[in-house]
Each structure stands twice: as structure tokens, then as C-alpha cells.
Amino acid sequence: MENEKNWQELRTECASCEKCGLCKTRTNVVFGDGNENSKIMFVGEAPGEKEDLSGVPFVGAAGKLLDKYLESIDLERKDIYITNILKCRPPQNRDPLPEEQDACIGYLREQFKLMRPKVVVCLGRISAMRLIKPDFRITAEHGKFFEKGGVTFCAVYHPAALLRDPRKKEDMYIDMRNIKKFCDGTLEK
Ligand code: URA
Image (cartoon, rainbow, N blue to C red; front, side, top):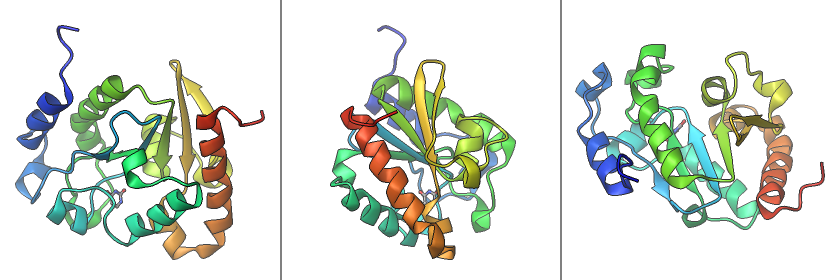
């Protein structure tokens, strides 16, 4: 397709992005990581400090916990693709501003178009509110599957929320198992 960028072009464009003020405070753009041909695309909120320093998403404490959940469904990072709504770290890890999300969302759209995953899994409320619906309620609606514009979405708790409240961990295991089943075509409706 003529107008479609390839992964390398998109990554290069994103690396020099100046569409919002976060370009002034970032160390690295955190574009995304993992398998670009995977059926599953995980989308978090925004890079934190470790991600900003390394340029890789979910490498801090929350990311290590996410790896355990992936392991619990026999997946590794190399089997999935992972990125964020924002590609640059907001100072002091504050919530992404609407205008920052608006400036950055085009990169995610392009990533999605190139990848065409079977399911997009939102990690946490901010991602779910942006990608599924603005009034998304993570406590009530985590683990549910949504169809939107021919795309299947699901949201799970953000791993940082699980670190704060371990009582949510069992729900996370259940949601992750169902996402795996959905991808394998064995989820009973
Ligand atoms: N939290 C996120 O939402 N994304 C990261 O990359 C790291 C922590």
C-alpha cells in the first residue's frame, strides 16, 4: 500500500517526534517492543522512569509482574507486542494529558494498522478509557471483550495496580487465561 509506512519508517518518525511538550523532558522515545506479527497487542498508559531511560516499555516493577502473568499463559515478551498510548514519559509519571494523548495516538493507530492483531489488550483504566470507551470502569469491566469498528478489545488491571492491591491478582489470572483462549479460538462464549 502506497501511503502505509512500514515499521522502520514509523519507528524513525516517532523517534524524532516533537508533537507535544514531552519531547523536551524525555530521555528516549518508547515506541514498542516484542513480536510485530503477534495476535496480541498490549497497550499501557505511558513510559515510566525505567522505560524512559531504556527506551523499552514495561521494564520496571510493573513490567516484571506482567511477565509473570504472561508466563502463566505460556507466553513470553517475544510472543506478544507491547506499547503505550504515550510514547514519552510524563514528568513525575503524572497521568497523560488529553492533548498529549491526541498528539500521540496516531502512532498507535499506525502500529495497529501494520500489525492487525486479533485482540488489543488495554493495560489499565487510562488505556481502556482511550481505546474502548471514555466511561470505562476497570473494576466492573476488566476481562470483558468489546467489539469496536471490527476490532476486539479487552482491558485488564494495570500491573502497577496489582502491586498496590494484590487482592486483584486472581482476577488478573482469570482474565489473562481468557485472553489466551480467545486468541487460540477456544474461549466459550
Ligand atoms: N506503565 C505503563 O503504563 N507503561 C510502561 O511502559 C511502564 C509502566
